[in-house]
Image (cartoon, rainbow, N blue to C red; front, top):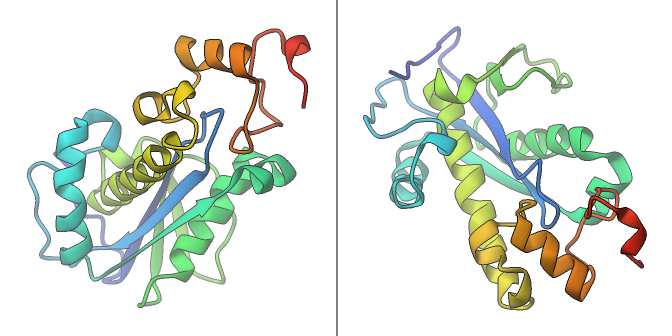
Length: 198
């Protein structure tokens, strides 16, 4: 059962989606939930069906005190690396919050200080605390929607289904059609990198 984790009333949870993908952005979200917030469906986005996540998104957006979502795109990921891109995305999502958080809960074990706001990194935080789970659902649903949009442009990679993750099908398509502007050039796109021309 997820719980609130209040050191302070204005506590933001933050998480990202798409770190391990070969294409598309890494997407971060930050959410401040009211202390009264309860939802029995909410869980780590990876534990939820796509249908449940899509149903939760408007609920979280309406019932949160505020939220922010940020895409960090491929060229920036290639420039600063995926870990820094994830943290940068979280910082930018927090920037969008209409209330300044008094405490930040971060999913995972790596973060860089944001302004001088105290924070705590929590491994598997998205399966422990509501605000991180909420951020995880928003990051995932916003990123999925973006991947479905660019799928229209390059349907042969089937991003609508694989969302840019390194599935066998996605790798076969890269082998056959090469790379697009949406692929992360710094990632190992194929096990034998030799066959790719940029």
